[in-house]
Amino acid sequence: MDLHIATRCSCMEEDDALLELEKTLTNEEKKTLRFVRAYANKRGFLLQPDLEVLRTVIKGMTENRLRFGKPYCPCRLRTGNEEEDRKIVCPCVYHEEEIERDGQCHCMLYLKG
Ligand code: SF4
Image 1 (cartoon, rainbow, N blue to C red):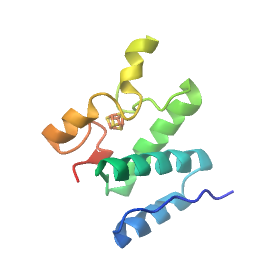
Image 2: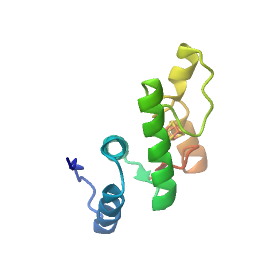
Image 3: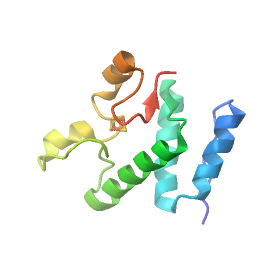
Image 4: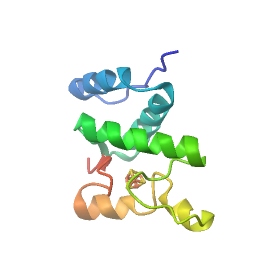
């Protein structure tokens, strides 16, 4: 089954690129892409435009969700302490400060809009 990704972005190029990316993802990865895209739209962030970087982050986050039950940040180490690791469930507690300071989150998934 092909999951539809809701499109709220007005940028046709970005829409086209994401549709191309979507075709290469598993259904679970599509769910992750849909989630991060909705969050980016809601918060006025941009998604990483380099599709290979975006694919890598989506895959890592999906793997963590399937393996550990939550979409842990694929760019940070889990400690094994549930309370501590809650901070790095995407979107992590650090991303707003990172985006404000560096223009992007640590994984380069969300960029300043
Ligand atoms: S660094 Fe970015 S991708 Fe990683 S958890 Fe934080 S918001 Fe998500």
